[in-house]
Image 1 (cartoon, rainbow, N blue to C red):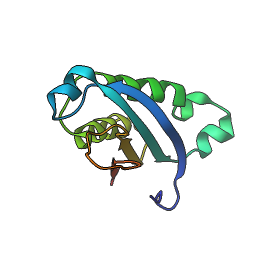
Image 2: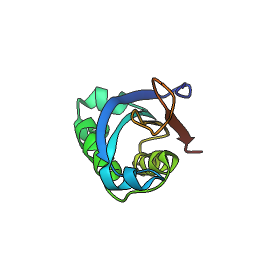
Image 3: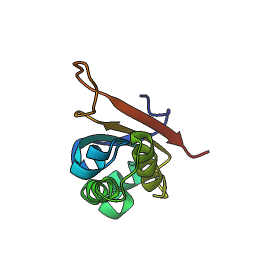
Image 4: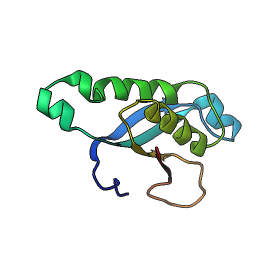
Amino acid sequence: MTVPDGLDRIELRGLEVYGHHGVLPEERRDGQPFVLDVTLGLDLQPAADADDLTLTVDYGTLAQQVHDAVATDPVDLIETVADRVVGLCMAVPSVRWVSVTVHKPRAPIAVTFSDVSVTIERSKQ
């Protein structure tokens, strides 16, 4: 994951959210934890120069918005969950690029695994 040249970044890693996403009935019924990593690419110089929170992305607010987007409205695929969070982040005018990884640590896989995840990256032209 590389932020495009000329952009700074804000990272939110390891956000744990309990959700009911998955294709199996027990995933929808019982739910499971999901872990998200979100990286935003944007110009942070105006916020740094003015020391002004309103000129950047408030990561506390972002964390709550991502949490709420994942904790509600169950879907089958973590690809859909990642895309939902990407859309939320790209709606912020100052964000030029975003990368979202959704980890599903308790995925119903019959063999031993350490992680399964989906990453979606998007940029504004």
